[in-house]
Amino acid sequence: MGYFFFTENKFFTKISLVFLSLCVFADISLALTEARLLNQSRSGQTALFNLGSQDGLRQGDYAILVKQIKDLDSRELRLVPVARAKNIKVNSDQSIWVLFKIFDPELLVRGEKYNLLSESLMLKGRNNPTLGRLSIVNPKTKVKENTQMALSSDRDRLSKLKNNYDKIADTRVVSEKSDSDADLIDVEVWNVNKDSRHRSSLFKSAHKEEWSRQYRLSTFEKMVISYIERVNDPDFNYDDFYKKQEKSKFAFEFSENTNYTSEFNQFVRKESQRKSADAKIYRSLLEKGESWSEDFSDEELRSLLGQVSILQERDRRDWIRVEPTRYMLALEWGIPLADSQTESDKNYRRDDLKSVAADIEVVPILGHKTLERFSLNGGFRSNSSALSVGNSNANVDEYSFTLGGNWYPHHAPYAFERPVVFLGAFIRSGWATVNSPSLNQKANYTVLSMPGFRLGCKYLMKNNFGVRLSLSLETLKMDQYESSQLNSSLPSSPNLVDSKFGMSFVYAF
Image 1 (cartoon, rainbow, N blue to C red):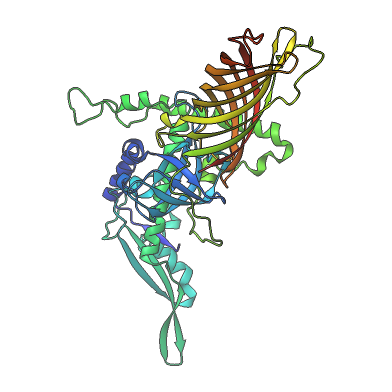
Image 2: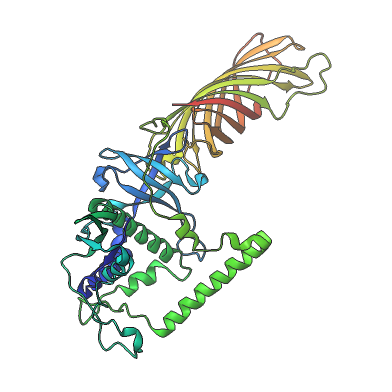
């Protein structure tokens, strides 16, 4: 990045510290933009979020994706960084991001919500520093001496004998005034060629635009780190934080609690940090044995949120879809878990008990964190079962339609590469034919089931194909409307308890 120094302008320093504090502990709430992951590419490096230009995002933004894993009232780790990202495409209500550094891929779940801390929102209203450039031309023998003198702003030029005296105390704060906030330094040397002298470059600092950009990203990351550290502090909660910002009843322009930190508060904070550090060392000793010190250097979050590097795409990435999948088709093969046939009929027993069903599932409302967990489904089933009629067995060939709904408690219905559990209820209506070979009788029935219940789990791959396993339980209420003979021995209104294990192949679109 080059050698530079900040001028020690007292006024500029105070204003910067105050402004940074306000940004971190007050204005940062404006930058906490809740984002929902709508889709992700097969490589996992490209993601679509439901935020766009209307939310203040700009194309080319850098961002840190953060997820809340624990309630803010708990004393455990609450916020964790998930990925570094750069915006490559922004629309009015959606944006595409490249996740060029993913810290934990398991936390990236389609349909889940995150905090998107973006550069443009967190640094909104902040001006870039005013930069100057200083060229130092030295004789070859005094390059080091003159460069160090320039870095210290020539403050020692008139105190050549300072090493002969001991400093007791500073009687006043030494400050400087400058037209720039920082100076970039170029180092040159004099070269002598016969009777001519010319300058040649020994070191050249970065361009002002590049340095300002790196400085802006560094400031952005410091603010993110400060925010995550503050929220993850076991003694932090928002109620106490907002209470400290209450205005004084006598002077509304001042806060009731100042930023002054008492000795007691400092002691409590140091004790909390010491206990956390001791606990971390103890865990490392137990888990890693003699190699515990390999990773115990800087704070874990600092190592995760390092300097944002320049993005270099090496491979082409798959384009992601604009919308999450709303529909899902399924073809199910069902196996009964109970057999209603009797052992008294020695002449006939049905063995091919099975069902084949096809259904479609629809997510009516997408994007809402609660309502998108509910879906509607309807389908058709062909079911081959049996029941007992006295001491005889009878075949039941049923054809019916279903209509119902499902609830997904943990993940959205369209989540990829996650076991998605659901609970459902449905009604069934159709017709059935009951045939008893032993009695040589046949009858037709209407079928009604209200309600039926199911529990299942599905798994979708990123190519939109997947599998679904389910358990269902219902009571088929059958009413006879036609018989092959008068005074038939077949029951007029039998009830058949139907419990099944279903395995389905599904396709989402």
